[in-house]
Length: 107
Length: 121
Image (cartoon, rainbow over all chains, first blue to last red; front, top):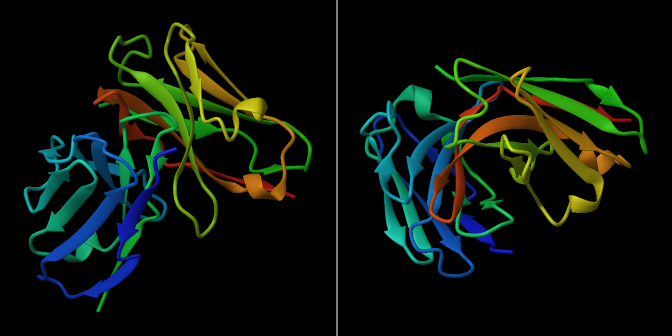
């Protein structure tokens, strides 16, 4: 199985901050990496597909980069509604696997 | 707008079988682009892919659960289902259904249900 490791596991940020989350794969996955936002009681939301493609309808403050084993999700300026947990997921091989999540909390 | 909704029991006993159904609306369950998946999240833990199914009935299961999982699809009812047997407390989780789309070799998930909390006790 491909292990996905996210860092940090949690972070505290203020409204307006630039936030960066890292995801590392245990082997080369090319660009087969997706990012999700999860809030309690809501359906998870796909943010980024194929490492850097913004999902339709997702605000441009979200961006993704990376290839191979190292990937990054960036929120350029954090609004109140983006305090949530973020997960990466590899779509390179089965079993599909997710990172452990990064909780973005209000400072 | 595609919508997915999970249904099933919220409480099941150890060693019993969990049966969940996902109802799909606003789009076709027989779409050639769609693989339908189940993902779960135990309390305080991360997301775990359980498996995916195509409208033809082809299935892909997580090897860690494969011996206990059965997925099926009913295109006439626009539903797909999950059965998980020999339940233990470790199967307590929020269960999501989702639509998978090909990105790379396999799938990401672009539409999700809100999830159903299943407690094994």
